[in-house]
Image (cartoon, rainbow, N blue to C red):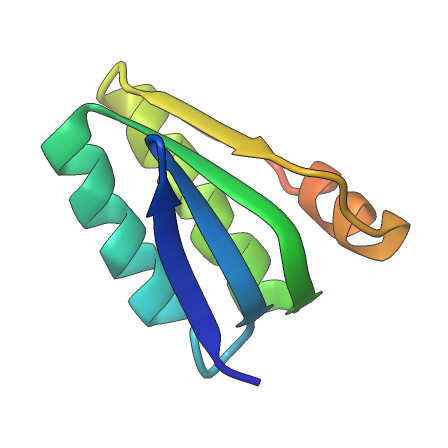
Length: 93
């Protein structure tokens, strides 16, 4: 499944899969938004799949935002499977 990102009042709505096929482009696009806006909120309620590459992309965005003192939030009701994957990454800064 493909991945789409649409902006709605400063929140970036992510729909689809964040996986090995889409993770790098997702990360680059989100990093550009973060650099331009100084903060980034992504809404992942409509993410249907996330694999290790997707988790790594979100982790890299979080670490970069933290290093640059920029705001970064991930919001939305998600499945327990995706929640578990996201909460298990290690944050090294």
